[in-house]
Amino acid sequence: MKVENTKAQMRKGILEYCILTILSNKEAYPSEIISEMKEAKLIVVEGTLYPLLTRLKNAELLHYKWVESVSGPPRKYYSLTEDGAKFLDELKNTWTELHTAVQQISKTHQK
Image (tube, rainbow, N blue to C red; front, side):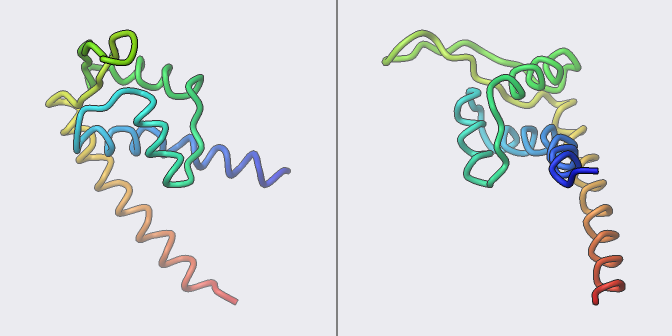
């Protein structure tokens, strides 16, 4: 078993949460989301992000609007819907519970 596969699965599991969290603070277009994720050391490529954004939009957790750009074609800006904000709140609670549990187990079993 390769550790890289497990690490990749762990990252994939939190991408939706991270995307929704970024969009909870502001509207953003995909390259801004990717940039913020890279700053946080979560490497995400367009081929991963766009399907996630589409899935979240189809689930009515996100919506988007087109905004004209002064330096090129229009940009698609994403933001949370009301349902998306509620969904994110639930994910935050779950993340807090998971983080607390992992910390507890890690502390208990440190060598």
